[in-house]
Image (tube, rainbow, N blue to C red; front, side, top):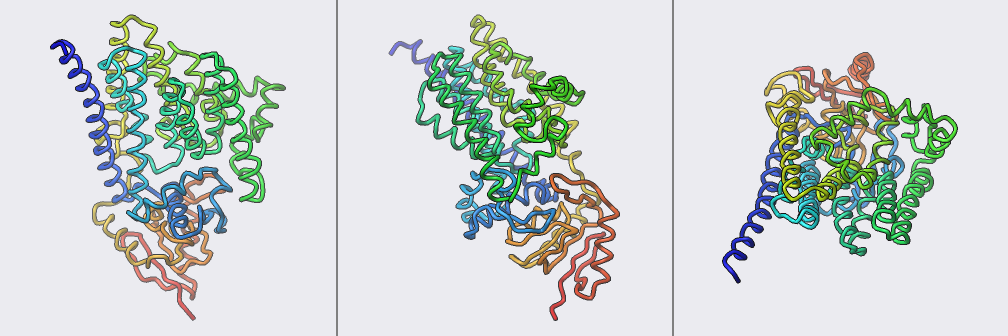
Length: 483
């Protein structure tokens, strides 16, 4: 082998090692943040506790069983969200029974998304260096990091899975594509729509019409089956989340009907100010480079449409897991779109995306010291002594004992079969109240209701069925009196 060939191979390996090193460092840094946030009670029953309970019950022979925080009824999680991939995590819980296990899975999975993006860049951009710049930009992109440190959500796992889906589809490897697509679909009922859009892109963009249409049919079929068969089978009725789309039709068919008969309503919903800001925040760190491959970027439209049409809080917040069906295709479109430029233009384009993503993550990433860093997100009242009081309160509740708690404390007490949310008591034998945490669950989301929390606390304090066993810094623990 010629010396110049050896040198080129060494450089290529160096760039690949750079990507691996960036993934490792990124994952470690985020896990430290997550560990500290969990220790400081910055996660809550909604949503980390819900996921922990589903996985814990699965590990104990009750697949995906959870306690409905609003009604107190035991149910299978599939009656709300169809994300059976949660069941796959049960063996990991058995090995390492901690909420941090789920968070670690989320961080590592999102980090692995840099690999197919690196491979795509290497294949289409013809340069290991340019591909590495793009892969590191994926990690630097602030909303990638935020989704990784957010409370565990199964749908977040779709980010790397969709990147692997596209990589395998781009190289015409249908068996591994199908495997990844099935896993991606199992992270949420609406992920089938994203798979369907990817099939349309493959049919039109690559001319593989039969295969592309088969993928589209499978994706649409999964979403319809999930919404109209699985959810009703486990909930006894339509999805409670349809209420978020009441203004535009109130159901999938209702939204389609509104789009045909009253498109102005749809346009009005998607052009609200928060939606436009959302699009800007997603696009700016990428310099809009995904528009160089508009057909591939359009695969993100189903998830974008859902986010913009929904009225619920968080759907147009880029911190949230709702970017799962958007982010992979924006980055894949950047990789494909930059290939249209000259070799020098590709390097400059990837470097610009990396520079903007780094600047954005320094400003608004989940890092201590940033404008939106962990020090300022979901802050707790009090001091380290307050956290220690919360720890002491949690330690009083026996493992497995039915309990009802306020929201923040819930993330530490979710690993049990019967797990209620204040003000629901149900079969609870223990009550843990954090007086400063006034968030009360509703049918879909929740709201701050100090009056309801205070009324519940007074009721428990006055009831002869309950005895107070702990009180410190506004944190109270009650135990049911056995008669």
